Length: 112
Image 1 (tube, rainbow, N blue to C red):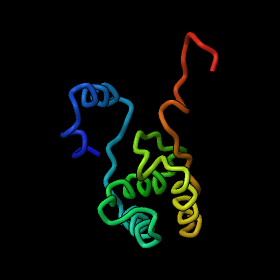
Image 2 (cartoon, rainbow, N blue to C red):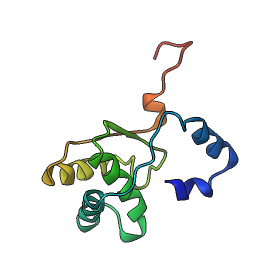
Image 3 (cartoon, helix red, strand yellow):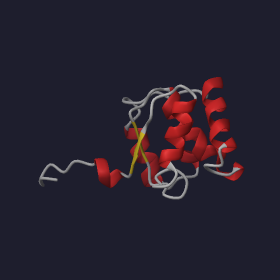
Image 4 (cartoon, rainbow, N blue to C red):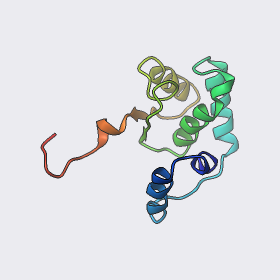
C-alpha cells in the first residue's frame, strides 16, 4: 500500500499521513503470500490484480475484521466476496467483511 500511496493524489496522501499515529505498517508474510496465491489459483482475480488479492490476504492473515475499499472491480464486489471468504475458510482463516466507505461511515449530525 505504501507504494500505491506514492502515486495517489495529494489529498489522499495527506489523509493517510494524518492516520500515521493510528496504524502500523505491516510486512507481507509468507502466509499472506500463500493466501494471495490461493485466491489467484481459485480465479477470484487474475494475475494482473495480484496486488488487490494481496490486500485481502494480508488483512485476512492479520485477522482484521473488515476491509473498507473503493475498489469495486476486484475487492468490494458482490460475486467475489463469497469466493474470498470461501478460500479463507478452506485455508483455515476466518471470513472477513468487505465494505464500501459509505457502508461504514458514521455521521454525527444524522441518524443512519
